[in-house]
Length: 102
Image 1 (spheres, rainbow, N blue to C red):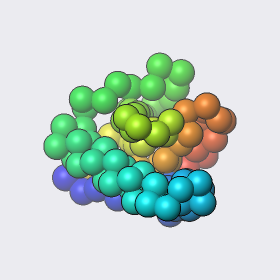
Image 2: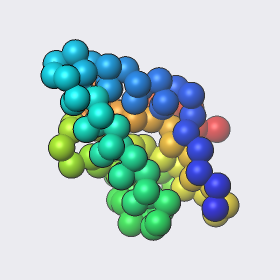
Image 3: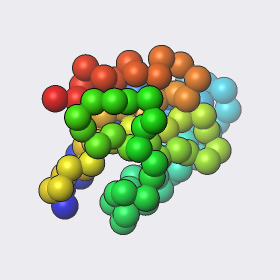
Image 4: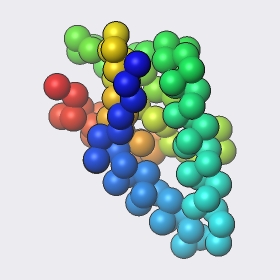
Protein backbone atom coordinates (compact mmCIF):
# COMPACT_ATOMS: atom_id res chain seq x y z
CA UNK A 1 0.00 0.00 0.00
CA UNK A 2 1.29 3.45 -0.92
CA UNK A 3 1.60 6.21 1.68
CA UNK A 4 1.88 9.87 0.81
CA UNK A 5 1.54 13.22 2.52
CA UNK A 6 -0.01 16.14 0.67
CA UNK A 7 2.23 19.23 0.52
CA UNK A 8 -0.34 21.25 2.50
CA UNK A 9 -0.30 18.67 5.31
CA UNK A 10 3.49 18.66 5.26
CA UNK A 11 3.42 22.44 5.57
CA UNK A 12 1.09 22.22 8.57
CA UNK A 13 3.44 19.78 10.28
CA UNK A 14 6.45 22.03 9.65
CA UNK A 15 4.58 25.11 10.92
CA UNK A 16 3.55 23.28 14.09
CA UNK A 17 7.08 22.00 14.67
CA UNK A 18 8.52 25.49 14.26
CA UNK A 19 5.95 26.89 16.70
CA UNK A 20 6.87 24.25 19.30
CA UNK A 21 10.57 24.89 18.78
CA UNK A 22 9.99 28.59 19.48
CA UNK A 23 8.41 27.60 22.79
CA UNK A 24 11.19 25.27 23.92
CA UNK A 25 14.34 23.94 22.33
CA UNK A 26 13.91 20.31 21.30
CA UNK A 27 10.12 20.33 21.44
CA UNK A 28 9.90 20.30 17.64
CA UNK A 29 11.84 17.04 17.61
CA UNK A 30 9.38 15.56 20.12
CA UNK A 31 6.46 16.66 17.94
CA UNK A 32 7.99 15.21 14.76
CA UNK A 33 8.86 11.92 16.48
CA UNK A 34 5.29 11.57 17.69
CA UNK A 35 3.95 12.43 14.26
CA UNK A 36 6.21 9.80 12.69
CA UNK A 37 4.91 7.29 15.24
CA UNK A 38 1.35 8.15 14.15
CA UNK A 39 2.36 7.63 10.51
CA UNK A 40 3.81 4.22 11.42
CA UNK A 41 0.60 3.23 13.25
CA UNK A 42 -1.48 4.29 10.25
CA UNK A 43 0.68 2.25 7.87
CA UNK A 44 0.52 -0.84 10.10
CA UNK A 45 -3.25 -0.79 10.47
CA UNK A 46 -4.95 1.97 8.44
CA UNK A 47 -8.44 1.21 9.68
CA UNK A 48 -7.64 1.17 13.40
CA UNK A 49 -8.19 4.92 13.79
CA UNK A 50 -11.80 6.09 13.93
CA UNK A 51 -13.60 7.54 10.96
CA UNK A 52 -14.51 11.21 11.27
CA UNK A 53 -17.99 11.43 12.70
CA UNK A 54 -18.56 14.96 11.38
CA UNK A 55 -17.59 14.17 7.77
CA UNK A 56 -20.46 12.87 5.65
CA UNK A 57 -18.80 12.77 2.24
CA UNK A 58 -18.14 9.76 0.01
CA UNK A 59 -14.55 9.11 1.15
CA UNK A 60 -13.23 7.07 4.04
CA UNK A 61 -11.57 9.75 6.17
CA UNK A 62 -9.91 8.76 9.44
CA UNK A 63 -8.13 10.62 12.22
CA UNK A 64 -5.10 9.39 14.17
CA UNK A 65 -4.62 11.49 17.30
CA UNK A 66 -1.21 12.45 18.60
CA UNK A 67 -0.89 11.66 22.30
CA UNK A 68 1.17 14.52 23.68
CA UNK A 69 0.19 17.30 21.30
CA UNK A 70 -3.27 18.64 20.36
CA UNK A 71 -2.94 17.51 16.75
CA UNK A 72 -4.43 14.79 14.59
CA UNK A 73 -3.27 13.21 11.36
CA UNK A 74 -6.29 13.30 9.04
CA UNK A 75 -6.02 10.79 6.22
CA UNK A 76 -7.91 9.35 3.31
CA UNK A 77 -8.00 5.56 3.37
CA UNK A 78 -8.24 3.99 -0.08
CA UNK A 79 -7.85 0.31 -1.02
CA UNK A 80 -4.35 0.86 -2.46
CA UNK A 81 -3.25 4.14 -0.88
CA UNK A 82 -3.19 6.21 2.30
CA UNK A 83 -3.13 9.97 1.76
CA UNK A 84 -2.46 12.32 4.66
CA UNK A 85 -4.60 15.36 3.90
CA UNK A 86 -3.95 17.36 7.08
CA UNK A 87 -1.95 17.62 10.26
CA UNK A 88 -4.71 19.44 12.08
CA UNK A 89 -4.84 21.21 15.42
CA UNK A 90 -7.74 19.64 17.28
CA UNK A 91 -9.15 22.96 18.52
CA UNK A 92 -9.08 24.94 15.29
CA UNK A 93 -10.99 24.88 12.00
CA UNK A 94 -12.21 21.27 12.01
CA UNK A 95 -12.79 20.89 8.25
CA UNK A 96 -10.24 23.32 6.82
CA UNK A 97 -8.73 20.47 4.79
CA UNK A 98 -11.96 19.45 3.06
CA UNK A 99 -11.00 21.03 -0.28
CA UNK A 100 -7.90 18.76 -0.37
CA UNK A 101 -10.01 15.62 -0.76
CA UNK A 102 -10.71 14.86 -4.41
